[in-house]
Image (cartoon, rainbow, N blue to C red; front, side, top):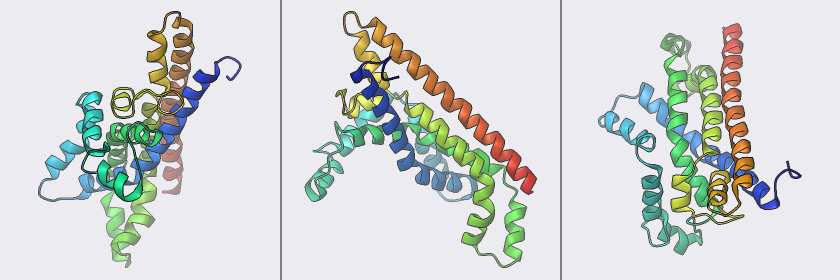
Amino acid sequence: MEAWLAPEEWSAVRLSLEVAARSVAVSLVPAVLAAVLLSRGRFPGRTLFDALVHLPLVVPPVVVGWGLLMLFGVRGPVGSLLHEWFGVRLVFTTEGAALATAVMSFPLIVRAVRLGLDGVDPGLEAAAGTLGAGRLDRFFAVTLPLMSPGILAGAVTAFAAGLGEFGAVITFASNIPGETQTLPLAIYSATQTPGGEAAAGRLALVSFVLAVSGLLLAELIARRMGRLLGRAG
């Protein structure tokens, strides 16, 4: 790939993989918790919470990026505190690109995990409870292994989707080569450059291969985990 792609193009591919991996690492645990709350929880405001969780799926990504800019910019209520207290700046950084990608892919993980959790028989948890297992014991010993196909599939799907995130990243993190210029942003830059059609074509092909590979891997993991759990059962 290094021989086929120019150094700056390879840098965009590498950065895309890094940003997508970081975004999944940031959002996986909160997404699992949100899925558990939505699937098993009964509390006031549950419908509103469900809508907020899935909001990034229906609003333009630029709006999400703008919201992050207002919150986490150096003058935003959260970003100013992070900058003043810890010297952390998220806007226009690789970390900021990962945050924007995590927000956009968060609902994908929640939906996959929730589907996996909805398929877990509550009777198994009840049976474990009759044997003396506490709530946390039931979750880690029974529920979590049974919902693991959904977790893995959601993580891989979110990773694949993160490779293609554009609007939120360019709005919040900008398009800085070597710092925030991920694969979609590099494709956009190539299309705006005279004679950049060949570079755009190469990068688009890489993006297509990575996305399809991620989706196929998610499906493979879900099926294999389902078979393993079926044998265990």
